Length: 448
Image (cartoon, rainbow, N blue to C red; front, side, top):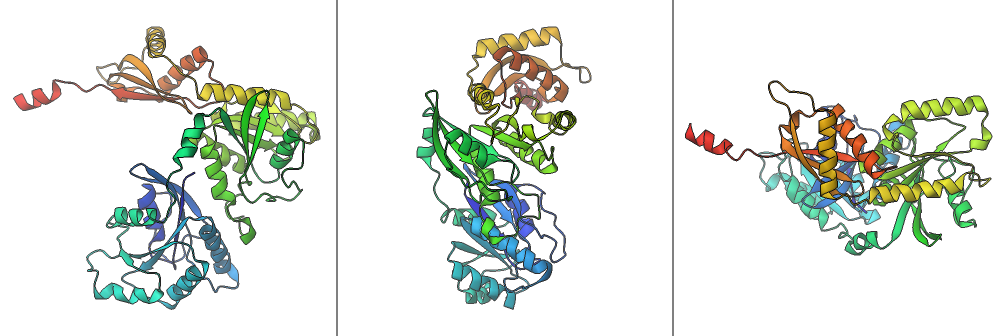
């Protein structure tokens, strides 16, 4: 699983700027205004071959006892609890403050691996200006400039010294015949009840209270000779609703469980309909490239009108998952569970399918002959051959000339042809275009 790095510090020291720099995004709002970030914010980051999750937090006031600052402090404590390593950000230009001492005291008491970072250090030497930060008792001070990208690479390398090494044995075990199945969804949709029903025992705590499950729990299971690893994830709550300190690990463990799974069973609640949170979880599953099966639980608890409304909501709000099979179940009454297992097996086969290059190329040429790509100016993209570029999810790489002009609509058309030929159900399919380089381009430039 991806390791986790949490960014903490008092307001306006540049945590969100550093978050954007690490994740190579603009996901965190940045302004010269203290206290802008309030909730935790998660993002994926990568340096070299190492991938990790970064958590941006609001300004941390460990001693706050009321109001919004107390809630922000709860969010930060949650992030620290989830993290493998903490990056404590201070302001190199603003100097040391009493609040910095409070945060350092909290981190020292916690004993979590911590890297001390002095941000806004552009143009400054590592001498006298940074010596005061050694008072915090957190070891070496690492100067960076998040705004200008200075010192970021060495910061990550320093943090990696505290992060666990990638589990190569676990990666090798991915092909050992065990299907990792993550059961994901909002709190209180019946995830633990469903797994208990499959197992035939009260293996997981199930209670009519949202958020009973706090961690991602793995349970071995075998059905019809096929071995599974069932992962019951804690429900992903709506942003701003995860405050209780007892809920540590909920969000980050769910995201990690989804990424490490082969297939994700996304559980919806028939009595609640499709919410923004359902769409958010579905979007993360799609972004992760996991195979997915949709199951609507508590189907026995709604009438015909509610069922019709729910099916319309799924068609509109989860339209981007139309490749996923849809099943209606009742976990507590054991209704409709057999077809779900068949769909999970089919989704896994689709995600791990092997597609021979000759077959892909023939399908590509047949598709082009039936419908050519749209012209771009005087030229029309030339699609020449295709091969498989990966599995889980399947990736098809198409080679040719001027492929940067191939429209998204035409990519969807090709995807549909490939899906039909290989009977791909329940898995995303990525079609990538790779334009061949003109071998005479450099010579022509040199001749001129």
